Image 1 (cartoon, rainbow, N blue to C red):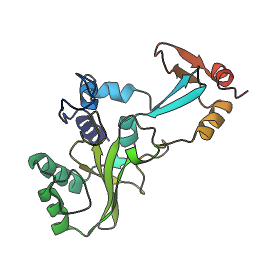
Image 2: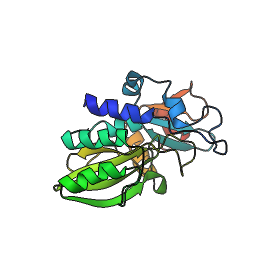
Image 3: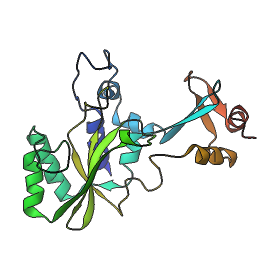
Image 4: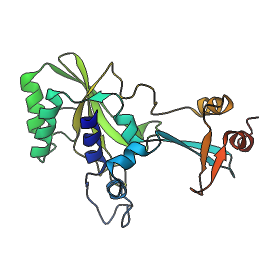
Length: 221
């Protein structure tokens, strides 16, 4: 678990560059914000945060990418060697339906194992509550489930991704209980049942609401 946490932390703080035409300004990119945090800061942050916009009676959910990726993933010897090749070779030339993977790292998998790329994905293209965009591909290696993951550390979704890293999944799950996306109806039901007790104000980070206040603001009574 500690090895996974260190890897994810290194990805969250990986410098993916800047461009004068992107929307990151001086320090608005993911890696610039994350580099001010220690791994302990990420460990201590809430797994999920709920914000209420009292004016428009809306609720927003944000899931910590750090917690999402460090709950149920593993690093075995295959991952270690693949990731070391990723660190050594600075190219994304793999001849496969994957992104952010070097020719040498993918060749290592092809030459030594029975592999199948199940499909690539980007969380930006669907419903997601994650604090940062993830891109990757699901892959089987000798019939075991693995996942290639890139973290978006830039300003705009089209660029600014980290090199891909390989991690092993347990039973095709990234996280055992924290969903990447939750329907608004599910959130409202959780509030009614009293499962969520603290809410932040969408416009003022120093202001919070109780469960009773949230029920009143969102007119769920």
